[in-house]
Length: 338
Image 1 (cartoon, rainbow, N blue to C red):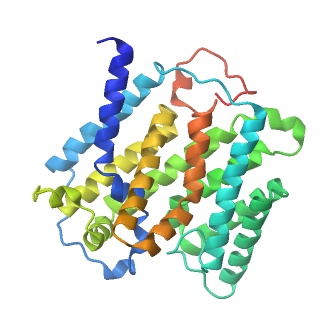
Image 2 (tube, one colour):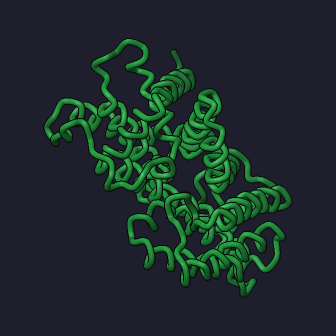
Image 3 (cartoon, one colour):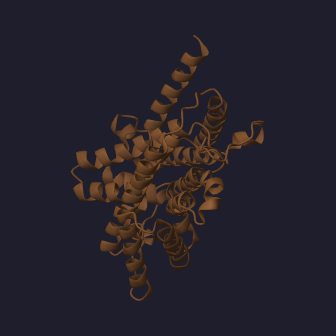
């Protein structure tokens, strides 16, 4: 079997393996749970030397190393024309704007569990709605991104550092659009090269944070979600030893791995395609279970992620902030994305 076929073979089975845990990885667990203090785990937390932890640590390291090795072997796709770049950037603005508007209409900041309070919360809701309208109208985007930065910083002070890190992808969108539309124009050529890279890296950190905060460090959240919605299909298939605890832990590790690969900038298109599949699987699962309200919450909440996925699929990892730069002798072309 030649090397190109081996790459396809490895990528295929790697993708199939990842999809085994797609449901909980795609869903934002905190969106559908009661107050965290009301949830108690039915399992004793895993220890660092427990067999599932050791096995998944080895699998995680192998996947990351495989991603780095494959990255240099995959073909480099041609860069999109400037007109098509603008279309994709508007898709990012439109999806983010719609999501922000829906959140403002629902009285939340970014996500259903970040409820706005009276006073400052009302101001943040208004700010969120204004940003959403500016993005949708494609009007004064540079100013809108500055307002989005202010909104994100406010979320960090009001709700805490961890909730802010969980939505660091929003900051990534702000940075991406700000660098893409940077003023003064004479600096835009150099800074534009970092737009896609900033979106990728900050989105990856958000995915890593969610893997830890919703699954690995607080497994009771994922376990409650999986139990409430009957998403542990492994147990449903007769594998009773595959407990909800193991299912959630497996999903959490996969989420962290995908986030790390995004940050590293290797095999970005394959990685984001798998993550997109996760989101699609979670939405399909909700619709199949006739949980239509939850399905719509997922769709509107994931609009920024969907648009980000489209950007990374077409643009790739970006020209900067890749781990492969550490040993690459080729100088980066700041006029291009990759």
